[in-house]
Length: 364
Ligand code: V47
Image (cartoon, rainbow, N blue to C red; front, top):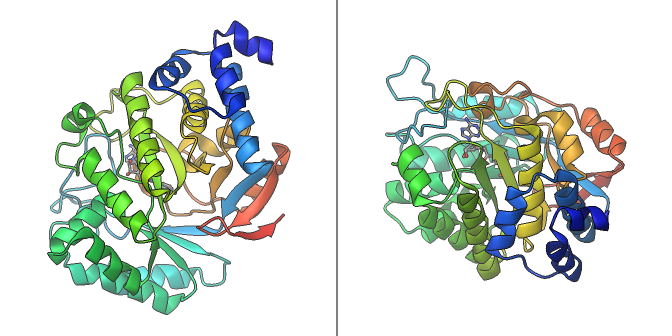
């Protein structure tokens, strides 16, 4: 394998990886430029096994998308709708509670709660939603509201991000999912999501949460109009933030799905680019404990292969995910825990049922 990496012209990077040395911006660019996926994957797997051994994590979870009404209307998103759209919806608190009640007989440990930037739901709605979920299922961990939503809630509340987060935590918030990061580059944001919180703003919310002791995830939406340099810059900004606060748990590369978006003329991502994003992020983000191969976005088959290319987590049972589904995702929906276990075992890894914070619930 090592001679293969050398033949791919990546021998110097392999030396750094073996020595546990940090990769530079240029190393990141070279990795993305190479199509030698086995060489890149071999190196990413070294890091994956150093950090997580043979463990492949999954979670018993549920998604609740409380509303698709959004004022940002990003060009890459098929989920967000204008308030006046015929497809717009919003759940009231009782409807959210009913969603949680529907699945009380399943061993769900986490609910992933995200929506859009709603123009007129009051701040109290969000606090009541958290309290309502906890009323129905007190022990559930609520991973909710992207950094973009948190910044919006702070504005609604007329409070600082820190004070707002403290109130959300008191109402039941457990941690923050990784959405809304997209690509931090101002060029990309200007073209695709002009109204959205800036990259710096996103990072500031995440770091504020970390300083309060909250954990969060991070994502990158790849496969649209971003350059390789913009990808590496995004990863570098995350790595720097993690050096400061050490509050990120997982990085999730998100494969762009073009259908029903304003970028619908672009192609879907390829398997090679999906695996490369997993592997390069594993190599570059040396201070992130976990990399997720999110089966909803890359499909269960590739998510299984990703377990040998840097990923150590597959996400979970999910069910009723709408963001990918609206953008033409073919595999969104539910996955049985038994199927996740089968995929992991067949990949030669050890299935580990985790909670949101990566405490082990059961080794299978
Ligand atoms: O913020 C929007 C992205 C994100 C599209 O933290 C799209 O564990 C692909 O962040 N094609 C939401 N992606 C999903 C997300 C997530 C999912 C699962 C687990 C976690 C976690 C986070 O999806 C959005 C946006 O970046 N997105 N539109 C699209 N057409």
